[in-house]
Length: 293
Image (cartoon, rainbow, N blue to C red; front, side, top):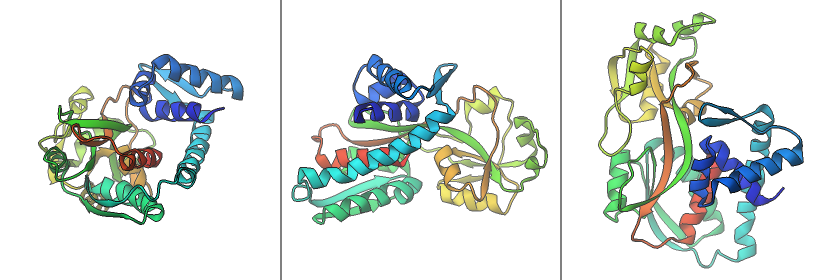
């Protein structure tokens, strides 16, 4: 078992797709498939199962994924010690991220880096995703981190995570009183939906609603995911948010069961201006952020 095999396995798990993982790693799909096969042969168990066009971790795969993330994080933390990088990474940087990602991902990762690189200074901003994108394009931010930013010819994107937008309600919501419920029962409750924004692939109306017969009664619009969590806790509203946010608040909200082929996908990308050269700081941020998701 090699570190490269671990990285390829984790990327395949993150993207739930061999080809997308290979593109993220800038290697061939056959290399990712070979790494997975070698791990399965070495461990004597199946790590992924294929459903439709995606691959999903088996029970054994999930256990291995958790252990590998811990191992790679340890390796990442050791690299500055053996490479003598502390003296080279310094300066003041401006970074932008979607509000949730700024609080729960970018700030913790920066703090990890800053412990080993005391010459670093930072300003972290948390405007709307569209503003993060425009500020990176205009050169006001060195790096950005957002949910589903549109591809732009002036941006160099690194896709960190592919996930699902999931319907969410508060704990003890009336819809949960039944052991089995249909997703269309959401039609009986008001909806809180993310306000449409320029420059990001999210909006008040999602194609998956029509596909599965969901007729949203949108009575509450929000532009910050922290707001909608508070709204859900005291009402019978429902919303659709990224699974990483729903998992963060799993003690307060419930992710509803969704039908097969629920293709409400999203992704998290880290990006910089294409004309700026890649830096060791950017590489370290990417490595540490990948472990977060």
